[in-house]
Image 1 (cartoon, helix red, strand yellow):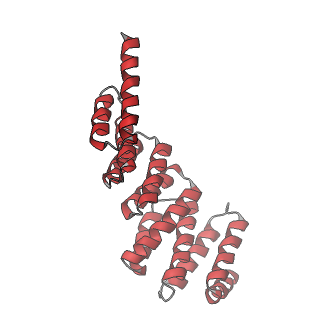
Image 2: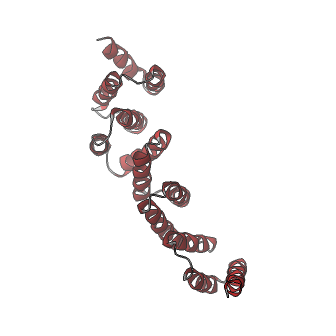
Image 3: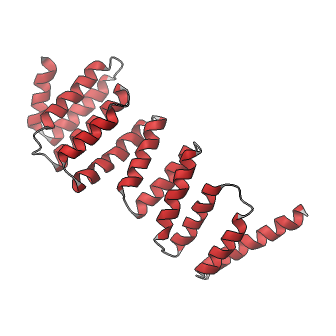
Length: 217
């Protein structure tokens, strides 16, 4: 019986692939729904449906991918969730997706992921709202984490403001806040501070000189 069931399943998967190749979306989805009765992984179900919808350029693929990623996240399968969130961002960059991705990186303490996802999110929020909103948003996230994460978030905030909102009156204060975090972090690698200062110098020499003076005080 198990052999027969396996053979039936293999045939169904073959038919599914054939329907997709022939551009028969509804028939492909019907076969998928039948196959999913034998699959206990709900997240995988949504992921596969997203794959099929994407092959037909159906915008519903984004919704299925987000649902799959959310389910993986709830199960603690963070790498699967990250992979799907990145896939959805390649299709369409959205605030909620970036926030969800940032949450995972913060939870798993992946520094590079935190920096990259927050950088993209910060730019998006700045375009949608304004610099002051972005600053408050960053404060609210940063207060929940240790100094290492705070440094990453504030460094990205500084870069975003200098690139896209250079006239913001709070920039100097944010830079000082970031420098204070470096001072608090006794384990901080000096190369990280040097990198921050080098980026600051490249983005805005005037603010860099202020930072140099502040560090000497």
